[in-house]
Length: 461
Ligand code: NAP
Image: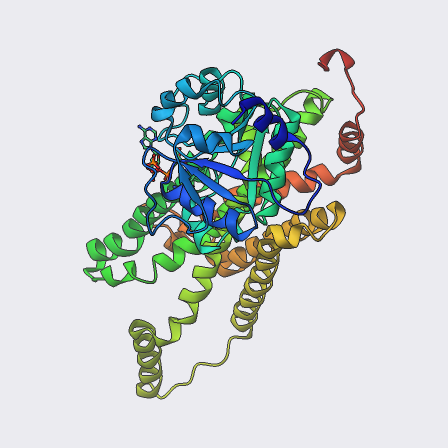
């Protein structure tokens, strides 16, 4: 077959309904899964393989030919082969001239090679139009049809026409192509599947650090102290009491940490008198993971709710209530209802319920399916106004819980205040700064700065 004529024919716009043949190099897991999907979508598929023997795993409507023969049958060739074997393409360079070569490969480590696999492919076959695509889609998801979580296909390449052809195939498979620009973007796209929860690292590590700190803090105060001074064994507190103390503490601190970078950013902007200077790196990174911090906080708040619900069936709680009743019966004396305590206890519960309700609302609105359906103002209203209200309610819930013991010397053990007192430090700081920032003398210049006004224009870059 005439090579040039095959290229020209295949790259010409397709006016009939018939789809153009797609060639796949490699009959491995990904090649076969993509082949199945392409055939289902109406594309004739031809495989280029080292062995032309077909097997039961290969889609039965597909042809299996040598690499050179298969390449001549299509204008688009998807290279479903690991990068380290790419040198087999060098002798095929002439046949591949003018063809669209789709690089779908991934590496085992971030930035494993100096150049991206797609750029390496372009160097090996300089006459081909290399496009990077499909590397974030797994063979398993393609084959099983469970593509809901990974419908997006990142595409990049230097040749616009070639990129459009590949994006056409992506669409025909029911996926969404996202144009990432030139082939220079390939390295970043190749790093996507290797990232391990990048935005979750800080919230999770911070939570683990806080859990460790508060666990030992509560262990010292609630288990070791009574054992040393009263010879009482409260080690069973570890299972529920201490855990149910740590969960709300973490929920409150992490929720406050969602709003702390916002107030710090406001202070920095007020101080600099401009919004056109970059925040420090650590603050930028902190701002980017606020959603994840909030979701981890919500998880701890939900655990607190569950742990609290089981309180009445705990053996220790039932023993305490029955011994109080028995002691009243033995003394033939009924303790009158303390209405102040009843008010405090009901207010504390009501504040907790309302705070948690708003917390859940914040979590729901942060889901992409919900946030995509509200406009920017609505999103800001929920995340900022209702978020602060939730922080106020949760802080008040903690304050009312322990307010009466706040200054009581008996609540200090080995000079250590209750853990809930520590948990109030960051939320109260955030709320006080936010309250101060609302004053018109600060709010007005801050609003102007955020609208683009500059106090000292020489600061702007
Ligand atoms: P695989 O199962 O190991 O298949 C690779 C295929 O490459 C083999 O079946 C073989 O096909 C061919 N091959 C092996 N050694 C060769 C050599 N020396 N010269 C020429 N061809 C050779 O790998 P895979 O999972 O299909 O992955 C293929 C590519 O897709 C990789 O770059 C991978 O990073 C990428 N990818 C895979 C997935 C996934 O879920 N598997 C997801 C995204 C991207 P023949 O025997 O037919 O020649």
